[in-house]
Amino acid sequence: MQSTDTPPEIVTQSPRLVNLAGLLDAWQADAQAAHDARAAGTLRGPITGLPKLDSDLGGCLAPGMSILHGTPGVGKTAFALQLATSCGFPALYVTCEMAPLELFRRVTARTTGTFLGRLKTGELLPEASLALARQAVEAAPLLAFADATQAYASPEWIRDKALAVKGKHPHLLLVVDSVHSWAEGAPGGAPEYDALNEHLAALRKLAAGLRCPVLAIAERNRASMDKGGLSAGAGTRKLEYGAEAVIDLARKEDAREDAMGEVPVTCRLAKNRHGAVGKTVPLSWHGALQRFTEA
Ligand SMILES: Nc1ncnc2c1ncn2[C@@H]1O[C@H](COP(=O)(O)OP(=O)(O)O)[C@@H](O)[C@H]1O
Ligand SMILES: [Mg+2]
Image 1 (cartoon, protein in one colour):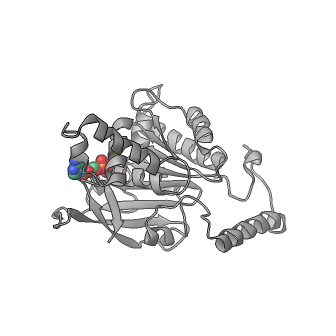
Image 2 (image 1 turned 120 degrees about the vertical axis):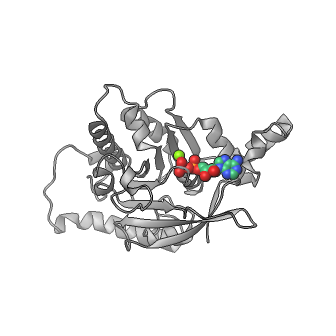
């Protein structure tokens, strides 16, 4: 994996021999950037927008690949979508499962406080519905979707679009929902294990080349469906091995909505290269508003 101390223009295919003294320039640049950001109160990278989680992650999402997993329906897509709109920088959301219009409705539900169901029943006049959508556009001006639901998006295509979305901004968040669907859609019909490993390697390379965090949603394997944990990703151990962080979303089977429509969901850092491992952040999930808040 490419370290973060080399400028992107010298991301190469060759290994590099370096001693500690040879890293001092990179150290100086990093120390300066950290100090300047602290003094100015600016972000050093995309955040989750959930303060405790951000703090546990070391302040922001680290450049490199992070994995988000959880049982089907726990809210992985909603969580990643919320991060993509709240990260403070441009975000490219590569969707391989849900159509962009449905994701747009989810963003609209959360950012306008409108129950998601109301955006679909036809109960709103089209002008009123569109006004809500426009409000969401204003609330999330830096979010773009890469629609890979109908056609495969190659890593090169994603890289080009990510650069376009990043523009002149200093940081970018790339989300892939999900890495399993993405790999499955690749031409060539490689076995699942090979396709997944190849696409995980591609994600790590994208993260290194773009110097950005990549949040990859992963399916769980059957054995870990209920218990989650570090090795819960389906198909290959490289999901966890190559990751900066593994975020595990869990909801108790008997959890019910409270009077406010909120359900407890636990966010656990099953792996964390930038802070303590095993920390849990209690969240509240509001399905109708597609919203996670810290409990
Ligand atoms: N109109 C709605 N009102 C309330 N909850 C909804 C509505 N539509 C979807 N949901 C809930 O949102 C959740 C969708 O989660 P999602 O992010 O798609 O999960 P995952 O990606 O983990 O499979 C589900 O638990 C579902 O019950
Ligand atoms: Mg999903």
